[in-house]
Image (cartoon, rainbow, N blue to C red; front, top):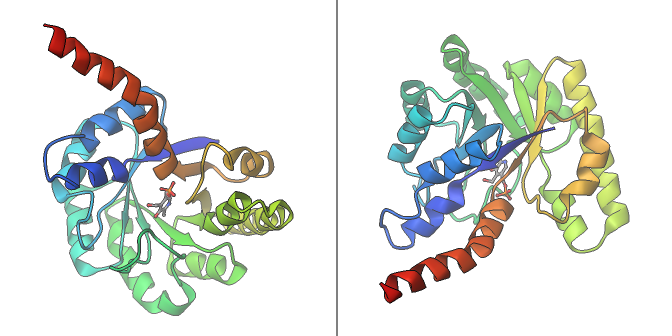
Length: 242
Ligand code: PXP
């Protein structure tokens, strides 16, 4: 199974001071060097973390595929068609949310999405839709012309994290059934959201060979920060000795 690494929260930390560090570009290059199969970034309407310049720099410098998460708006379409990421993932976006809370309601947005996706197909950009693992959303994704779906694993993650393992296993079944349905329709299948070092193994056991790629952000960036503190402090102490 492949791993896409979402580097949004490197930018969250930078934006806390509106300075130049830490750099999402460096983070993307190091993730690539470590073996990440794909780099994801979400250019949100409110620009709370990733900025347009990050997208431009990362697209130029990174050689693994770049996946741009975005809302299905005209402004975002113009940016995406100019920068040409390898893949776009359309997500629902609400200003007040902390993170992408639910999947895109493709069933309710069919007409808009069918039109919206056309330009990306012409530009040779893969289109993925971030959806809940529901059959109706899978069928609608195929109908509007998507190339792929990314199944929302947030519900699974929440169940696992609150120790509801039997319910979490049922959610894995739902993810598996939706994946198989999507594949039978010729869609590529990815999954992600809320995955951590603790809750991912159980998911992978059941979805290996069914889901092509997992997308992980917050947990990887969180651990990168903690695992790196020791070295960062030691290096600063060295500066004081000189
Ligand atoms: N996939 C999609 C579509 C997302 O919106 C996000 C969060 O930005 C992720 C995956 C990664 O989620 P997390 O940061 O919880 O790993």
